[in-house]
Image (cartoon, rainbow, N blue to C red; front, side, top):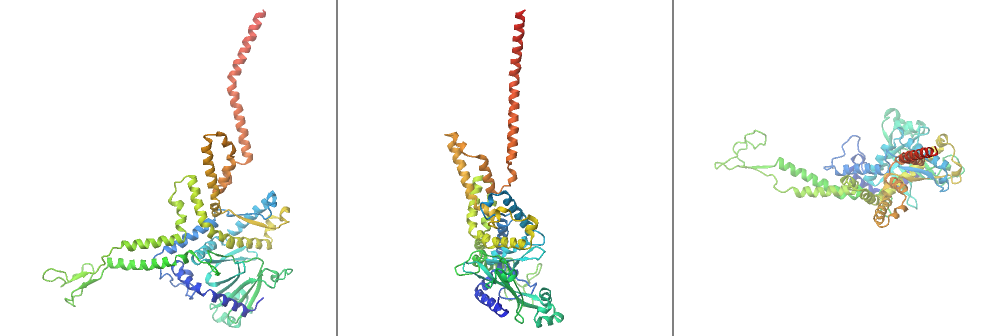
Length: 543
């Protein structure tokens, strides 16, 4: 446990360590995410923040990046992970697998319910990740109201890592009005300065600090927050007063980084990598606008013929005195005569660089070449999976993994799992745990290499079969097709079950028997006729 002064000092030390990042984040926000530009200045609500933007390529690329991340990692239209027993022996137990499948379905119902707001907050998380390289989501136990998700503004969050590079400390410094503070903490818990504002200025804002860190004084046999893995307290900056304290069994702030540099806690992002190109593009676009304005509405130089009749560009205007006796014009346009194509080509090069940095061009591969063979499509998918795996795979370990662990912990503590699913199956009680298998589109892309290997083997087998047809007997077609379907994400319902296959086989056998009977009917009839004729002949001979 720590007191209010120590909590504030710890947060201020974290703020000092990230000062260099804040300057860069402010530049990035001004160009790709203006609404999040609160790092170096506090802005009044409703003011314009897009004055530095003359070209929206960076903004659009960031939105495309966030949409791609969501579709590759957490698509709303499919179940992007499975739950399986942690013990391989328990995975062979049908009851255990069924229980895990029901747990997965429960998690998805909870996650995408109207009250949880996961879908919109995950999208916000990916936007922050693409812009700043670091993003934090708070997973709150609604105490009977379910799990709620909130992506926190990076400007409010200050993090620290443990010895293994895992984020395990977070200080959130945020503002609330006096009225909101009363609703959250109760009037009696507030400092005197805030209580005085409740009647005079209830909408006046004050700063508060929520600190979360490992519980170093943890008492394992204590069932209260003192026995939890993480300690948390909330402090009023005004009056330096601790308002309340508590704890968490699991880390409630999944914090992911895009990529990190050596000895740096905060991540770096596509917007960071393309900041130079984006700033250059804005300057070039601004210059191009000025050039276009001079072409359309150029400057003019005139002879000082008559100051009482100034030169005017108004449509239909008469400019007297600006032609001499020889008919020569005494006014000349100063429109630029340079070739604008160089500037346009340079701008397009910068736009392509920004789009490449945000992986926009990578996700256009399949769109731009829709007519491909199955093998070509797998090769394209393999290429995408190889390029995306290092960055997106990190989101599985830093974001999705802690998120799922926190969800399961909340449901277990509230009794929801046992109420809806029943007790843990006997085969799982020895280990008592589950693990996560990711089956998102990204996971399938990472398995594309296996699909390419299957297709190439089939092509080779077809070639060899021209010389030795018996080689095809070594390939199990049904199993191979199911493997390809799994890699490509095909629904299992498209394949016949074992019972359906048995029924089809029986129907085929019955049809073959009926066909054989039909084919044999003329022969049987002829044989019967012959036998009858032979019998008649024998009878006549006896007489």
